Image 1 (tube, rainbow, N blue to C red):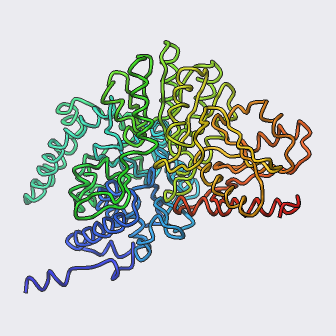
Image 2: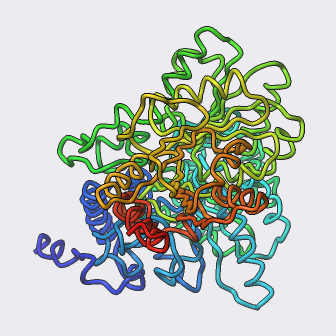
Image 3: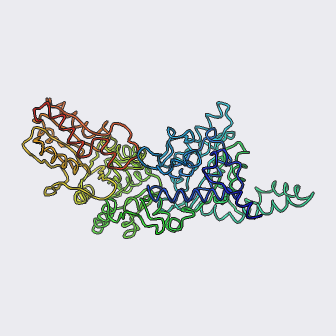
Length: 631
């Protein structure tokens, strides 16, 4: 009979009206549902790739949030957003979850046009509390008593924007603002510095807090005398706490009520603390401890490797494709080689040591390696400080994240003409991570800043050449940008250099490009040759500033077409077009580039849609050559 009751309690995702039915479930049913969700996460990410460890760590937390809040009326904001997979499953997207990160499928990040439960699009770090503060204030002014809930990880807390938001949010003592700190003691690259030590000190108070809960619960069960005794102890709580812990939390100093630490894998504890937090109707921070990769042993043992992972075998945990050599690792190893003979070279990362290939430098020269946390603004200005002392700082950063440091690049680096080198990783299309992660804006951004040089190599050999020149020969800001993944180039490499190369074929059509898609353009040229359409090619390596002699040399062409893996507005093609117009160029000039945000899909599919694959390039040239009598 007991076994029968257990079986009757079991539930599955397909039986529930989500998220509403979560409030009706027993704790045991919640546990069953968490197991089902974890199996779905592991199965889907093993096929599609994605962010696994962070999502496995917040399954119970996400379920508890939806049990205790009323989404979409209560607004839930996920910091970075890559840990929102369970949230998607619990808000009506379980049947489509197999399409995660696929073309025309659901995104790997929150997107309001995908679901009313996704409050804001999110793909960058440390923004959730600012959004939540704004939402909470708007609710208050409108007489809306719902809650704004920000979920932020301990890694994202290293971003300065978090403290700006907390300082602002703690001022209003009557807002329904709740910040949930998901503390897994493991940001993408392990948290370092004073903040990590501070959180460790808070974690060490858990024994005290657990003891306090146990005492209060025991007292409440004593007839007659229990409640008054518990009340008396509660009134003395602050004094006891200060004497035992001998500290006030930073969050309380900012105006927040601090609750925690709480076991992030206990639904009962999470239910309790969330109900308490709601009852205050004041700014509250809940400190939740979770295990990154929870429930899948390979991810628990190596959470960094399973933060963002390609397809993998579930049984062994081994990735389907090895990424032993790629642009990131080649960059990292070459930086080590260059630093062997020059102790002025310093390496900086913003919590992406492994993602940018700097693990090699960190191992070889730990005293010259700095992980500043998720703080790109600080990374740039910190590098400028090094530069004022005669050092050569090299900041390796994803293209999409360098956007966060525009002000520092202008004011702290460019105006003073300080020499800082940027390794711009993941430049161009990155694929399934979609709009928030494509590296399409670094060229328009950096090329708008004076005293800046930009290189875009097309293969490993050029990458090494450009690094050497950027580090030892250039002044000011020197950026070397390169794509995600391995070098698959196939173009003539007998004349590699760090400036530009003309491939002349006695044509009156000139095709210009740079970076990864050079190989696609040479394939397109072969297709055009077969059609009798002669084209010359100008391959750029140093893409900015544009040498004056290039403009002089290309003015005689009747048709110039620039293929560029960048946003069109502010692009290099736009700058060359402007210079040609100023020099009275009378031919035809056009550009093929991105003209808006690009949705998630494979790299190959994205490039094809943008007209940057060889077939589409060839067809575009054919259409432009008809008027010239070439076809």
